[in-house]
Length: 116
Image (tube, rainbow, N blue to C red; front, side, top):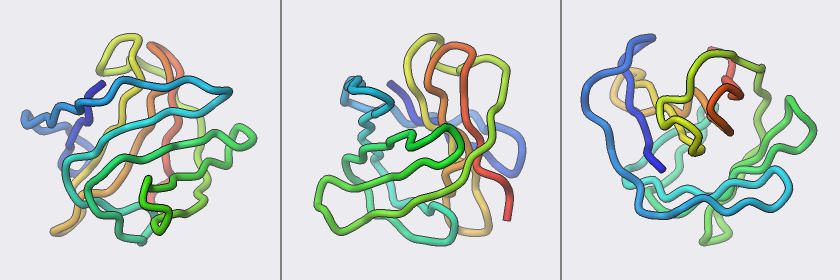
């Protein structure tokens, strides 16, 4: 599983590898993110995170430390998962912070967080 970092709407060439494999239980994915990031204005430290698809458009992210948690809305996207068939996260740089932008659940199915 990999985490992809982008700049604005374009992906930059630096990609950070993730060490953990995905866990599948319903619509739940587990990622290890090796850097601090933001989700809809809330800051998250590097670490292991569980992302759960709650009802299609509503998702949640929670840290393994039990302290970092938030719900967020998404919209479906089509295209090609940058990791092939493996779940992947895509981040974009907004000012000085990396922000979660897309969540790819499979090779052709993904969710995008609407821009603020």
